[in-house]
Each structure stands twice: as C-alpha cells, then as structure tokens.
Length: 130
Image (cartoon, rainbow, N blue to C red; front, side, top):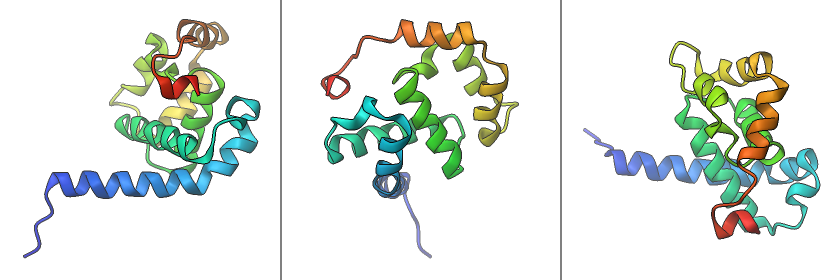
C-alpha cells in the first residue's frame, strides 16, 4: 500500500501552484497592467504561487477563482484579504470556497475596498517592493 505523507502532499501542491503560476503569468500581466510589468518572470511567478496558496487556504480551488484572487491582490493590495470585512467573508466556513470571490464582489462595499487598498499600501517584504 502506498502511503503519501502530508509533507509529500504539500510538496506536490507547491509544484502544482508553481506550474499554475507559470501558466497564468502572462495573463496576469495583461489583466493587471503596469502593476506587474516591471517584475521579471521568476519573481512574478513566485508572487502568484504565494497568492494562490493563500487563496487555497480560504478553500478557493477553481482556476478562475484563483486567478480572480491574484487579480484582486495586485489591483487592490497584496494583502487585501487581511482587511476585516474581506477577511470575514473569506474565512466564513458557511460559504463554499469557490463562492467566496463572487460573495466578495457582491457584498463588499466600495468603501471597504478603498480601505483595504489604503490600509495595506506599504510593502512588508523585499519581494513586494520589486
């Protein structure tokens, strides 16, 4: 019987996220424009993979919803999901993972989006200053 340990599953998921990031990199460049135009491919792919992993932590799994999460992170703020009203929706276990992006777009006020953008404008790592 084949036994796959949690560390092996995590490694497989990381590899899948990196492949997904490579696959959508140019699409992200097109969709979010100048925000990422100056980033070289490898750092952009790393950032996308990290964002995908974060989205998966909220139960988001469909490719189009992962892409939407990445778009929001680059267009609103890299840590838009930390803003309390947004985090509340993303963390709500009564909302199916792949319904969370639609719920965010339907129920988050313009004021909350603005606050999310303003409250996390300062990058908190060298990668985010690239």
